[in-house]
Structure formats: C-alpha cells, structure tokens
Image 1 (spheres, rainbow, N blue to C red):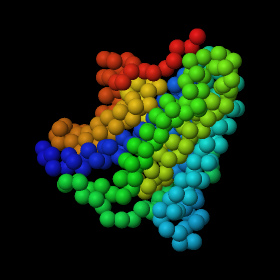
Image 2: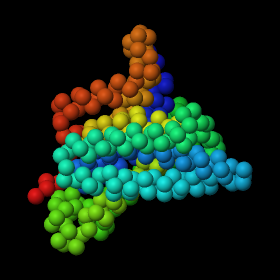
Image 3: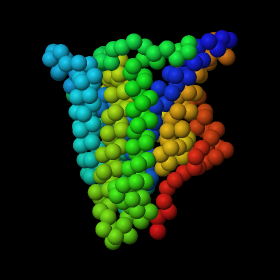
Image 4: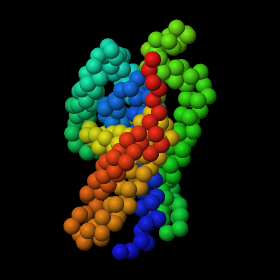
Length: 309
C-alpha cells in the first residue's frame, strides 16, 4: 500500500472538514442557546447553494469577474437563508419552546422535508453544474495540490471560527446569548430580549450554512435539491463528536470526520483487498462517532450547555 497520496488526502480531508465545520457551528450555536437540534440546517445549506447558482446564472451574461460574481451570489444566498431561518424559528420552533422535547425535533425533521420538496419544485430535481469562478494556478504543498477554491475554504473557516469566538465571548450579543442559554426568564428581567437573541442565533447559523453551501458547490461543481442531507447529517455528527454546544469542539469534530472520510476513501480499498471501495468511506464518520460517544459521551472537548435554573 503506497502512502504517496497521503498528503493530498490530508488536504482534501481538511477542506471537507472545513465545510462540515461551517454547518456544525450553526448546529452547536442553536443547541447551546435553546437546546434544539435544527435538522433543517442541512437544507438551509442546500438553499444557499441553489440561490447562489441562480444568481450566477442570472448575472453570468454581464461578464463580471469570477470573484465578484461569487461574492454577489454569496450575499444573496446569505440573505435568503437568513430570512428562511428567521421565519422557521419564529413560526415553527418558537410556539413549541415549552412543548415536550420530541415535538420540536419532529417539527425540525418536517421543516427539512418541506424545504427539500419546495427546492425540488422551484429548481427541479436534476443536477446543475456550478461554475468554477476562482480560476488560478494550483498551489503545490509538497507532493499535494491545493486549488484556490480549497485555499479559500480553509481561510474562510478559520476566520469564521475566530469571529464567532469573538462574538460569543467579547460582544454584548454574545453575553446575551450566554445569559439566555442559562436562564431565559432571568435574562429578560435583566433587559435581555430572549426572542431577539434566539432569532439572531438562527440568523448567524443560516449565514454559516449559506457560506458552507456556496463553498460546497464551488468545490464539487454541482448543485441539487437533495445535496444538503448528508453534509447536514455529518455536520451534526461532528458537533456531537467534538462536544455539542462547544464551538471549538464543533470544528475539531468536523476536521476529524473530514480527515477520516478522505483518508478512508483513499485507503479503504487496499486495506480490504478491494472488498470495500471509496464509496464506503462514509462509514468511518459514523464509526468514529459511535466509538467516541461510547468512551466519552460528552464529546472530545466536552459538552458546553448551560444548566437552566
């Protein structure tokens, strides 16, 4: 078995993990504030990618530079996804905050199916090619190749994590989020508006999902109405793996899953003498999740959710 491709597989794994991390951060922020798993989050990623594709197709005849076209499409995707998540929280989740925990969970699954169905009606079920807008010379990293799109994904994920850590720990909104997570009623008595804080959390999560959707489409070059399900499921697994409610844990878990998936795809065939091919690489993500939760149920870096009074 040759290890010449290992550096390339590591880079690919970090890129995949970065995209998972953007989605996992949205999961973990929402869960950290209101203890809700928003299973429609993967479909928000899909909507972001589809809106971005529509924007690019609409503006392509104007011969705009690729980076500008990508930026404009990203802005439109973020706005649409933020509005969708805002209305989902307001009309689907907010009335159920005092309901049994299973009720909002079922509602979230229903919203996921609804968004996927609406996307299939609006954009049709066929796959659509997503253009490569960041043309440039690939960067050689040893024996591995790093494309401009992959470099952008890595840099954006690092910048987003730093920005989120600053927002949560160094801003008035972050203090309001932590207060709402600990005790919404007491926070409201101290001047915090929990409904506004929760809406802001959902909006931030939607922007992260839209960003991940555009990055995913740019990296793989195709979009489709069902593209959000598997990334959403793996991102949720990453959030649990790293420690649900823990921002740094979500990123660590996502990177670990990305590396396992990429390296597994490259070496699963030789390790099993061809019995299992690269198409079975997904099993590594869920086997890792089962193993970690068996040995450490709170995740690698520990669950970080406030005890509600």
